[in-house]
Length: 221
Image: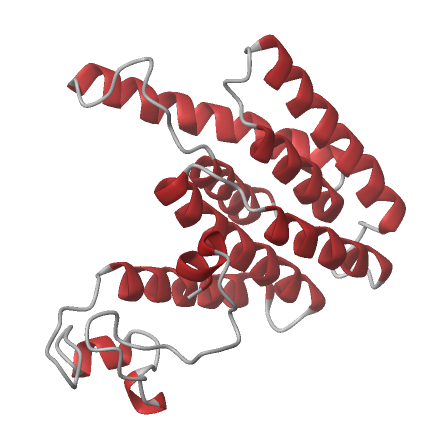
């Protein structure tokens, strides 16, 4: 819902979810993540319109990450630290794929949440002061890359690195940036080699940032 509504400037509170074709509101029992898609065989109960595969993919991905983070960290403060960031990054990644934008509304929410995470130390060893240093480091490095690449790194990515640094601290954000560029570079090289993309084609970078964050979470923590 956030992936669809936020870039369009629509409220995420109301109106309730509805079929884009017949406009009928979706009942709660037809809106259970992933399970409802299976039970409805991928179609609207009212008009039979096909439901986009985007919905079950996002729901399944989110659910799997939440479970994997739980298996790794247990029901501790660190678990909530990771699932909160994962929720933001999944939303931003798909918006970036669709629209090549990073909405300021989500960045602002990340900043507010990042301050709260630092104050309550949701992740051990990262307090608000570490977060502010991380935000400065992430934002500054990304801003330099934006400048020296003639804007190939978007301003939205700069803001995201700063907001993410507020959660993770300086050491972690630099590691995330390193892995994001490695993953993105490999992906771009594969697309170029296969002829499916050219050097001039824009590439959504947020998915690689999300992948780098998740990879480091499971390997280094």
